[in-house]
Length: 124
Image 1 (cartoon, rainbow, N blue to C red):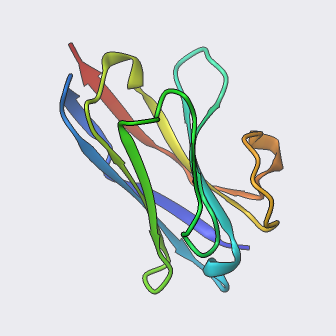
Image 2 (cartoon, rainbow, N blue to C red):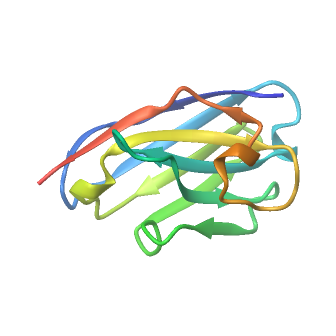
């Protein structure tokens, strides 16, 4: 398994940008399908974006399409989420997750490892 640590969250005005990072420790980072989820207070954890092991295939939830970009650097054991044109409704805790199986899924319970989360707050 891998251990995941997110960073890069913070407070930003609407229309601004943030870049989240998720650093992984442990072996075989490049064998993990990686994803970002978010969870607002009192709401379920929701899929944001995911990226294949090689980085060649990316997936986005409806809220992220056209505004967010996921990427990974397997040499640095890190996955990123570039978030542009942020809206107040993007306010949430953002979590990095790893899945050992190759197939993509948007279901949180099907991911094997989770980080502690990083908070994003977007003011209007």
